[in-house]
Structures are given as C-alpha cells and as structure tokens.
Amino acid sequence: MRPYIPAVAWGEVSFYSWMGSTTTNLINLLTAYLWVIIVIEVYRSQKVQRAVEPLVSYGRMGLTNYIVQSVAGVFIFSGFGLDWSHLGVFQSVLVCLAYTGIQIAISHYWLKGFRYGPMEWLWRTGTYMKWQPLVR
Image (cartoon, rainbow, N blue to C red):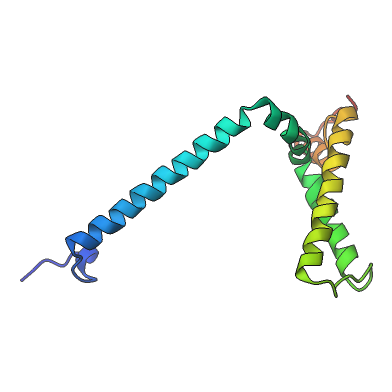
C-alpha cells in the first residue's frame, strides 16, 4: 500500500512542468526585486524628491483627505448634491483626479502652517488624552 501524501494526491507532475513553473516563479521574483531597486534609485534623485514633496504632505494628512474626499464624493455624485451621477467613467476619473490635485495643493500649504491635518490632530489628541499643539 502506498502512503497518502496530500501534495502529490492531485496527480503526477512532470519534471518539465515543475521546472517551468519554478523558473517562472524565480523570474517573477527577480522582476519584483528589479522594480524595487528601480523605484528606490529613482526616488533618490533630487528632481524626483522635489516633485514628490507635495505628495508627502498629502500622505501626512491621509485621514483628513480620506474623510473629506468621501464626503465630497457623495456630494458631487449623489442626488442631493451636484448629481453628477450621469457622468461616464472617463469624466468621473477626470473629476476625481482634479479633486485629488486640489487636495494635494491644499495639504501642502496646510502643513506649512500646521503640524497635522485636522483629523490627524483630533485623532492624536484623543489617543494621548492630552491637548496636542496644532500650530507650528
């Protein structure tokens, strides 16, 4: 009687099939490493760092931007707001990209005068149970 091994219970796997999937997996892994290296090297560039600086502010105010964008999206696309629900996919994407660009600019300028976004400040104050300074 042969022992039951779940790994081979699905059927026999040919050597060539196994080598093909193993090679594919290794190539995929090396490709992922290559992309990580490319992204890191591009990010180290001074030009890219200056271009990405506003996105850092947008990320630091992530909770505020998420909540404001959700509320604005409901207002823009629902019946009790601007009712732009009739827009097509392409037009909706353009509206969202424009709105995100506005949020990036506002976040960048907000953090020049304040330490945190409003929701981040509220969250931090609630977490530490102590009034956190907001203004720089």
